[in-house]
Image (cartoon, rainbow, N blue to C red; front, top):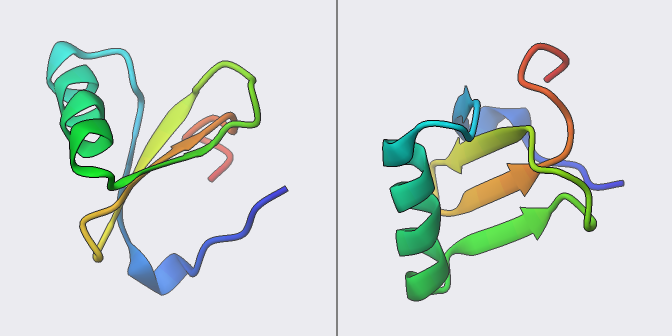
Amino acid sequence: GSTVCAERVLAVIAPESAPIKRLIQEARERGMLIDASFGRKTKSVLLMDTDHVLLSSVSPEIL
């Protein structure tokens, strides 16, 4: 698994909405997307204070 410094996380969001999907695509285009889902379904999106967007297969309720 992966670990993230909790102090650097600004928000944990579900990935279903259109604005979040756009945010993911923009981060991918800028090279700021980190896919930590390991091939599983993305269940949460973490916004980091470094402007990175991190995809996780762990649900927001658990994080």
